Amino acid sequence: MKKIAIITGISGQDGAYLAQLLLDKGYVVHGTYRRTSSVNFWRIEELGIQNHPDLHLVEYDLTDLGANIALVQKVQPDEIYNLAAQSFVGVSFEQPNATAQITGIGALNLLEAIRLVNRKVRYYQASTSEMFGKVQAIPQAEDTPFYPRSPYGVAKLYAHWMTVNYRESYDIFGSSGILFNHESPLRGREFVTRKITDAVAKIKLGKLDCLELGNIDAKRDWGFAKDYVEGMWRILQADESDTFVLATNRTETVRDFVTMAFKGAGIAVEFRGKAEEETAVDIATGKTVMRVNPKFYRPAEVDLLIGNPAKAKAKLGWEPKTTLEQLCQMMVEADLRRNEEGFSF
Ligand code: NDP
Ligand code: GDP
View 1 (tube, helix red, strand yellow):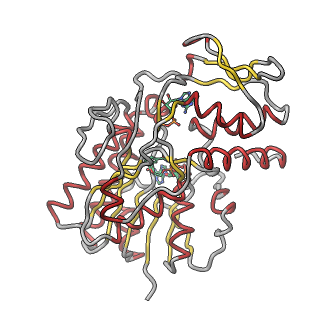
View 2 (view 1 turned 135 degrees about the horizontal axis):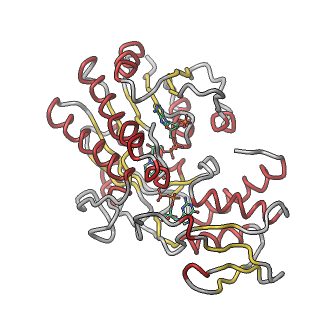
């Protein structure tokens, strides 16, 4: 018998990679997407899995409790990976209520569906390093106190504690993966790494003059999404439900990522000025190719994230395999190719 999994948010970065992984492992996958006026499956198309016979696409909204109950009743899954969310920190400041409903209450809806329909279903909650926010320890591990700094972080913390609570109250296998930032060529263009690699490709091809960014002093622990979805799967194969940090244990500034991305396209840059006046100049041509624009600053910032994945290594045998240099190069090359082909996502 093939295992059956539900992935909420299959149209997102992690949903696409996780679907590919589970299909390769012989699962039947039910991937959910939202009703929109123009549905977009470019990620699963890029991975070439959109017509896989064991992939079923299901229209669904996480915020509708009845839809969650119906989904679990109909599919009768062995595992649920709750990846759906309003996942962008910047937007969460503009839309805190919608973020709370989707990212926070949405997870409760799925947990309620499991409690009411079948308590044997294994549940994965996509928690985030943004819950550490104003960090209380360096590096951050499973026992580091939380201090979220955005409506997104607060909503995710609610979902995280609900997962722990349903584990303890109802003996549900509810596990939480506290994942640090993970990127890929499938990352949305609003996130800083992909915004940078897409702009670098456009600048290289003469389609853009200058990239504008916010706080380039922010430090992040960036890994490769494909490595991280393997960790999600391992979390649900463990003997007991638990909470795990997945991270690389390396942190770099956004400025470092800018340098790395331009280098990946064969452009050496030099930074000039400070704070709001800071720019990056192409050393060969003297042109300004990056400038800071305070418009992209956030009302409250998460300055430094670096995770300690020791527990995941010891208990799950999980380790990241891809270096930041490899990841950045992969993203730059994908965006160069796409921009040459006129790709627009
Ligand atoms: P994406 O933003 O790429 O994908 C989010 C998915 O959620 C999309 O498929 C989106 O659909 C779907 N979605 C949004 N709202 C709803 C809704 N109301 N009902 C149903 N589906 C909805 O995120 P990632 O793939 O990068 O991340 C996956 C999960 O992991 C998210 O929960 C994210 O918060 C979390 N996470 C991500 C990290 C990262 O660095 N990538 C780090 C830590 C946690 P649509 O395409 O229609 O918008
Ligand atoms: P986050 O860690 O989930 O907020 O992921 P992002 O990729 O959105 O942001 C990572 C860091 O980059 C944050 O500290 C942002 O403030 C910083 N940053 C600087 N400039 C930008 C920008 O133009 N866009 C985004 N998204 N982030 C930026």
